[in-house]
Length: 367
Image (cartoon, rainbow, N blue to C red):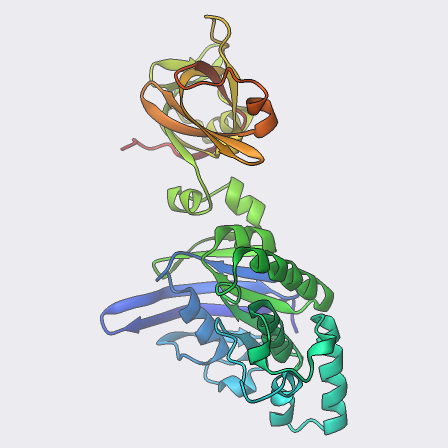
């Protein structure tokens, strides 16, 4: 394979008058875990099915390892697929389910047995070869489905929301197993999910779809901390969208939020200076990028906003602070020991809020 394992160019797909995919183009490097993320109806599963060959595209091409597979039937694409419902044969044992694809490829019986044993060891299911799917837990069935997809030694592995039917605890366990197996095999993988936490944990690279269009792609940390727009910022977790005004003065830049003026954090200052702009701006600030401090004097620090506590919610390791800055709601995440150990954090208490970091989303008129 070439360095770029999968190339999708100009994929369009519609049903009747509804456009599901609108000219999707992307290049997926090999040997990494890629996640297709987006809300329901964004086109994730449709794109996955087009790559697998189960759904024809209206226009565009799919190239795998330098080979055009756009019009190739699924069985000739050398792609492993794990469906949302696992699609195991209930009348076959675990070993028979896993060996099915090898049998269809006319692999000799002795070789089939060896490869099934190896793949069962990889997914840590060595003692389950003679059991039937009905005697397995959801997590075990998922591992069997994964083993069946991997045993044919595919060029690419496609996973269609494989964890959605599992409860939270099992889902977390199987998620870690998926990561381990992909890292051990180095097989190029694309997984569809609408779960942001799952995508951030698993992905080497995220591909975020919305309304049939690719909104942003990149490493999870980059997409999370440097969102392309408000949709991306909001979809990947809680975010404070703050309208501000950039003011240039002889002694430096100032951000005005409401009636208060503060020194902007370094990242925002750098973005403003690079663009050479002033005036209305919109900031995307994650709750963990804000620092709250009890206001113990009447003198506000130059880099802090003054606000009031609207609510305090205990969340285990963290405390969720709902605050107001001149009537504008904001959310802050703080470590529990810092808050719970001090019972002074009460509703109505004035606090100072410092911005550690923020993404400058726009420098156009807000609203």
